[in-house]
Length: 400
Image 1 (cartoon, rainbow, N blue to C red):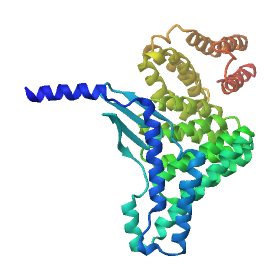
Image 2 (cartoon, one colour):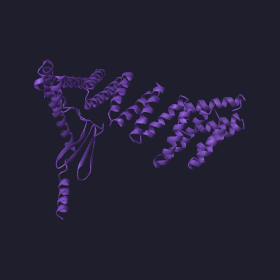
Image 3 (cartoon, rainbow, N blue to C red):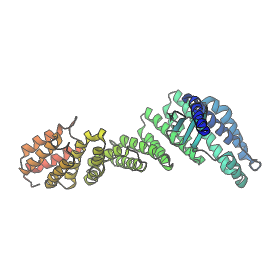
């Protein structure tokens, strides 16, 4: 009985003493300032050398010059969820999670640098070279980020982009897991700055570097996949082959993370495969993944009919215009998806098949016009080229 009363009182106290959500950012800012100060200010008898003096200067510069100017280390985007008895905060890049209760915030998990204690151990065993180098690179990175911020304030976006890239490189050299995530974020900032001056090439390279670093982190898979999708969107009109690689990377990463966005990446991948006339692989994606998954999700079921049309035409291209196979596909998908049976797309495909069977170019052209009305803006270019080739065969009297 007493245990139950104690539990009840604890719950009441927990509800009444939950920290407010707006207290999380000050908590995280203070924590990161302390971490940078501790890392920069740590030393041991074994580190009394020229490199140690440089580290102390870097630490003093970071604590007394950079932090007052920048407000401390950058706070990543985060999500705070209220669980009634406590608050849960998660950094969107997967680098940390925190719990808030009894008017305080506590670290649940966090990717960070080697602790002061570990740093001292390394210094004693190796002359402090590794820890000293890390502090030097961190100081350089923070200074370069400050240069980037100042350049953005002056609308010098090209200068800002270059400074962010240099900051990212310095973060990478430090070698710690936490700083690798900082490097990825700096590359993303560089991309945004390059985008402001329409320098697509360097910007894309920065995004690729960001994706590479996020992918190395065991909790950065979804973030990397999101960037690969963004890269695919940017490249699809410039370098279709590379865009396909980006969408494929995105789909695989999302799938490995159990993320539902894998489906949308696969749809984009299949569409571009058709553009490059890689019809068989595209058909496999439609048949094995896209159509079954959209049918299984009520909110996406209305898109299944369009995907079936794409699948059937992709299969037509893959089989080098085997119209008997097209008729078989029509029958199979009508049985598989009742919504497709009797739809406008189904009727348009049947009209195409009938026109080919009767060797009637005029009826085939009318059926193509029906296909063109299926979507706003008309058929995709790859479908136009495919059907135009078949129309020319009919007009030339060639057997299909």
